[in-house]
Image (cartoon, rainbow, N blue to C red):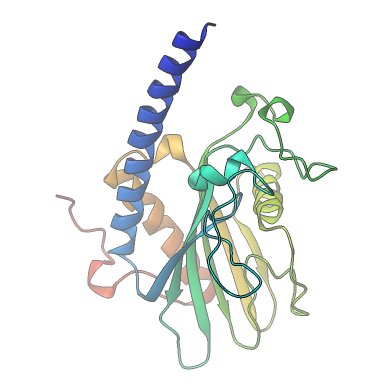
Length: 233
């Protein structure tokens, strides 16, 4: 492939990625309008935010684009979390998050500090793209994504934990991942991005997940007046 053809393909890829991401953001926005929450945020999971470095005296220094960076840092939605702080109950706090995994072909951390190459990934055919719906409710400690247990052992590598739970779901015939104890419950469900291309499909996936949450925890995730799957416009 010559360079002219290469960059034609790159332009096509960027435009396709835009269309896909636009659809995902629309889906997340639709879900946001259906759930009970008090605050929301977003977080890159596979890459690090591109931002200015600070000098030792606290002044802003010029951006270093290569040193200590992965090319993946310029693709923040490769793996991304949309986080919603839930409305607390009288006794518990809770949160709901949507994790966007565009490609789970990444097989683990490299043995060196060198950024992972796509040449070491599983093939696109053998990889998947999906959303993870995750709900956590807790009383005495945060039983959420990156704490493995009640002893609050913090995991250093968030993306590997995402892929660990994803693999567990796949190995269990795509049944939801549920971890619980006397004080906390953590529920994760995988939804293929190939199966959630419309608001109707997003509504069904969210309604099914909200029912699972209510059955397991008693918590009402959806806004009360929209519990009965309203007609879509």
